[in-house]
Length: 196
DNA sequence: CGGATTTGACCTGCGC
DNA sequence: GCGCAGGTCAAATCCG
Picture (cartoon, rainbow, N blue to C red):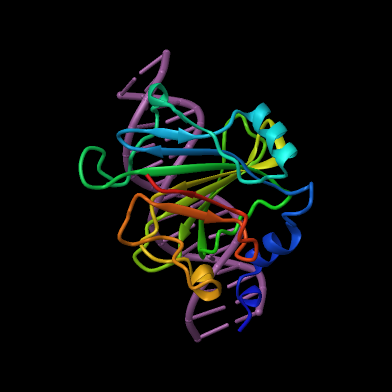
């Protein structure tokens, strides 16, 4: 069974995005928030665009702290202080497609128009049973050619994509603080990873 | 027919 | 307390 036929979103992303192409800009903006102690991994918009263009989205990521901009709310029963960590990862990706398939299977559960943005925000949950990871997808109001994708939470299972293709775990269940996003399972040099 | 998507209603937090 | 905005729910609808 071909994964492409099972996941049309993945098909679009991986087929249309050629890492060797100068038009491919992967995740030039990345923010990781972690409650209560938040850190971010990001590049500023302008520099990221430049560097992403220069490097053709080589996956280069710059880290900085953002302790003074903690406005992230840990809602829906996620506890701030103790056991459960509210982890947020934000990607800003130049793409005509709003759906950035990361190998996981998402179920759309909401769509909402947001203030100061002409484009609606889409809400997705990981459709894997027991996995509570969510993501929001919206077009950048300042530049609609960019897509803002925000992940909340940590997958408690492996990516079906990676399990299927690479037989390598995308998420290590033994390490809840580790995350990896792969833009394409076929582009092994195209992945961003974070392991605290 | 079952799963995914759509979309209006509802809930919650925050600012005034 | 009220209104607004963001987030979620769930029934209706779509689609393979």
